[in-house]
Image 1 (cartoon, rainbow, N blue to C red):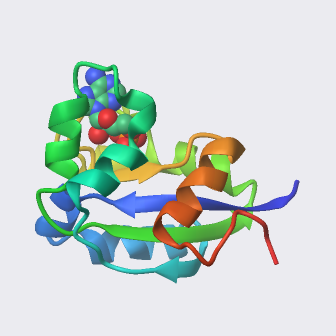
Image 2 (cartoon, rainbow, N blue to C red):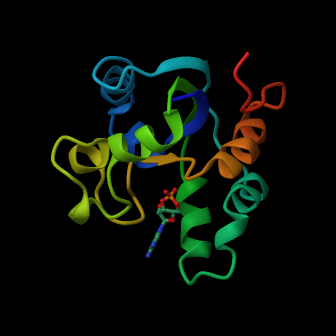
Length: 142
Ligand code: CMP
C-alpha cells in the first residue's frame, strides 16, 4: 500500500475543551501517523466557507461555518501508509453516536456538528484541502 498524505483539523470544540494534546498524542502514538505540518489558526468566514464549499447547499452549512469560525482550530498534514482511509477509520463516524469505541470522535466529539476533528475523505479532497491550509505543500509524498 502506498504512503499518502491527508489533512486533519482539530476543530474549535476540541481545542477549546483542551483536548488537542490528547488527540495529537493518539494520532502520533496509537495511530502511527507522522506530522508533516501543523499550526493553530482562527479561520475567517471566507476561508471556512471555501473549505466546506462542497456542503454549500446542505441545511447545516451556515451553522457549520459559524462553528468553524468560533475559535482557533489546528490543521495538520499527516503521513502514513494508506493515510486517507486509515485516518477516517481512526477518527470514527461523523456522528459520535455511531462512532466505534476507541475512536477520536467516540472519545472527544459532542455531536454530529461539534465532532472534534475533520479528515479528508478521498485523495481528491486531500489534494484540495492540504494546500488550503498549507499553500506550499501538496498531497504528494516527497
Ligand atoms: P466533517 O467531517 O468536517 O464534514 C462536514 C461537517 O459538517 C461535519 O464534519 C460536521 O461537523 C458538520 N455537520 C453538521 N451537521 C451534519 C450532518 N447532518 N451531516 C454531516 N455533517 C454535518
